[in-house]
Picture 1 (cartoon, rainbow, N blue to C red):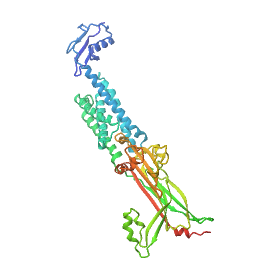
Picture 2: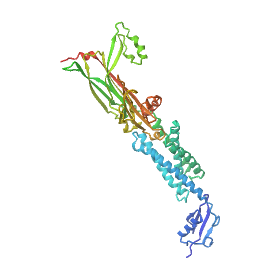
Picture 3: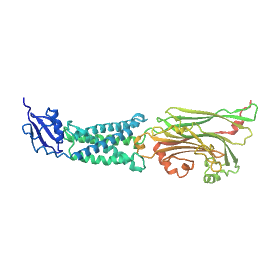
Picture 4: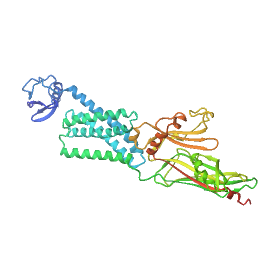
Length: 485
């Protein structure tokens, strides 16, 4: 029984020629070589005569009419797939850390959105082979169009965030070129009417555009710019216990309790902290002239609140000082840390008051993650550390340094790395406690103690850094009035 004739249809707009047999489509071909492969699958011999009109009917051209620009088509496929796959890798790399490990719901949703958008672009990359191939799938063009649109929105958002501060990061070599690529891809797909074949194309385009834009910018706004409704709240308390005289020596044991409690709803790192116990002495001004020293004390950058009408020339010396909880520790909401100290004071001391204070710098844990290196102290008097500083140049101090990552990974890929530094120094008469967030990795103490104020202030606001303190005072006469029995 004779086979029906093979009919080669005229080339379409891409140069692809449909092949039918008995009124049914049996395939398509880009070239004569492709047609011979199709004929072999249909049972014709390998050396079939394509000019035999009894076997093959040519419409819209003969066996030499193959206008498909093969090189250009393959270049378009390669470039389109490279852009979609590159954007997929970038968005998954940006989204997965937040989708898995973000401490806030908004951060996890943002991460999931980016990761899902990357998965869509992976599907779109596979659809490229069909759309610029035989187009066996009805919606392959629409899928690619959706992938290119997502690439424009997400990479454009990352590029916009980078332009705010224009700090170099290796990721800028991806989302800036991908933004340009997505513009080219959308122009090409719109020119080719890639949405053809889907029902209600206008409604589809409007829905995709509105949903993508609203989701992207709402998530970015809630994660990056929306003011927090849950501020960091820390309660600090300093409390003197009952003084106890020593039975054998002329000293008094004074208990002091320091307490820090996270009374808010946000976990917070201890960035730096210290407590101190001080003896305060004043001179008696019988003529009531003490208040005249107020301006002098304020000019000297001392506490004007110590001035009174009948006291003047207050002095303060450190009795005990140390770090409280220590950098890199944190307190969850409702959690507290208590430390008790007992100091020994000679009964012969000439203090008028005993003061104790507790100072803490805290950083929101939902804004940033500090690495474990921040817990390692570096001592200035150890010669084997890069923070070694000879005593002739600086006072003794302890440095804690670590990397901080923002809890929204979009910021991490559009900014330089940030580092946190906690400085605790001893001047010989008192302690100094400082904390910095820097955009460069400090190598020695002068790297962050000079010219860091402006940068540090901006970063403190970004990461939610807050300073809190508490103080208590007890008259020294109360200690002396303790029953020695």
